[in-house]
Length: 298
Image 1 (cartoon, rainbow, N blue to C red):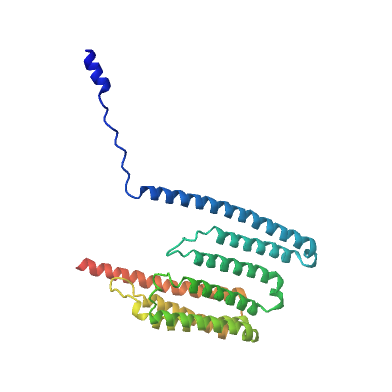
Image 2: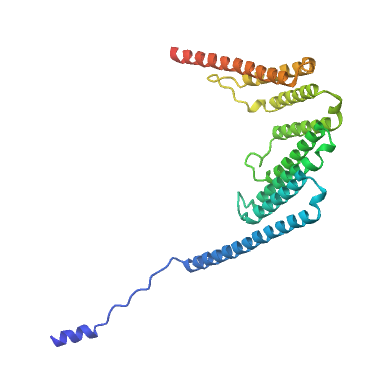
């Protein structure tokens, strides 16, 4: 009995096998720790930048109120405080945007979109109380349209490289974009230099006419991309009704709109819109009934 116990005592226990880890696991763990440490450090830095930005904005507002605000009206001072706050918010948005955000690491493109948007908004807020009264209504519309066009150009030029449909841009896309750009530029020119010599009804009529021309040209450019199916309403019908409505508006506002009040002209605008919308609806219902009858006969 004692011999058995002695044998059991002196019996060598089997060595425990060390767990096997997949190859490269240590490197993966170290890389994860490093990235986590970098994120924490980056978060602390961004938090400090946020707090510092708020302090800078508060200091700017205090200095403005103490030294300069008395020379301006309430709306100008509100615009300064609000626009500066928006700019600070845009800067913080760019700071907190991850560098690898978006498709193909488009973090810098996101930053451009954020900053261009807040700069445009701050500009509009400052323009209204400071400079709007120095220009006519049409010139103010030209400024709004021109600044919006600049915003679109900045963003489209930064995102064109990653847009899925723009990576291989076809000739008709280029032509359509050029037509739209030329129309906007000519509209800005008209509003700034020529619109003051006409009544608003005539300016509206010319705007409608120019839009009609642009839509006709764009339809001709993209005609090959329009799919027509015998089972659904032809897309050319609503497009044709839109063209007819715009032509009707042009004729009314250019030849007949001036003697009427603004409210009466607005009433004509909505009445004509409802008329052509009703025609389109009746055509669509009739087309649907025809298709259902054909399907029933089959």
